[in-house]
Length: 302
Image (cartoon, rainbow, N blue to C red):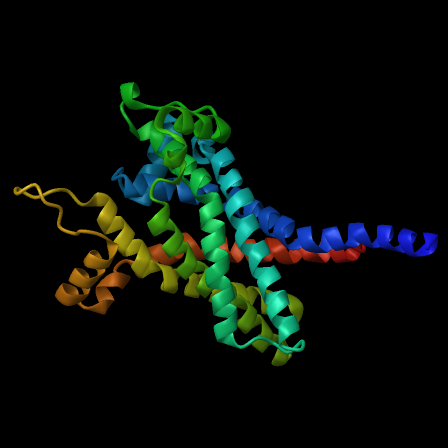
């Protein structure tokens, strides 16, 4: 009995690590990618706020704010990855592992991978929405007049202030469209990566070529699947009431239907090239970091 009890005690850490590992690896990979992509994301936010082209924004920031300005909001970006990406990648691996076990160990069909990606995206976005809100506010703060700036010291200070000043539920402001977009993005990102990597390995490609190729495909499909939802979200966020006091759209569905009727389906993909440049690099870097983390763990026997 003592030997059995001892054996069970030895198994527990291994079982715990197996459960925690995909979540921790996903978070670390996302945080690594954010450290690389953060300056690009900062420039993107300033462009969206109407401060000029990429080159104009870069020159102005370097001249007026210094190099450190490119990493303003990094703490919120890292917190977002520690919540959002930890949850979505970890959940995706747990779901696909369970589905594969139920499928007698056979590779999952694409539709099952897509369903796992949808679910993981919804969970990840729900968990990461507060950090996402803090990140956007911190990045945009320097563009506001001095009297209107919130002057958050870091991500945790931002979360505290939002909760204290606006109520706890304000931390999930705009979560509905954010979750919908994340579901589409993660369906494209996660399912396409696994499917492409599987195909490339079957074709005889090595580990790194398979990872790079699958990462590129994953970045493209993440952009392609999420842009229509991002387009609708942007239209809703920027709409203003007309002379009669009424808004042009009653909600996301109404916006989508009116756009489809007036402009056709391709309207949802306006600016796809720019959007892909924004989304794909972070997706690719996340997968590359994840691959290196997994290799390191394997080399030390974890």
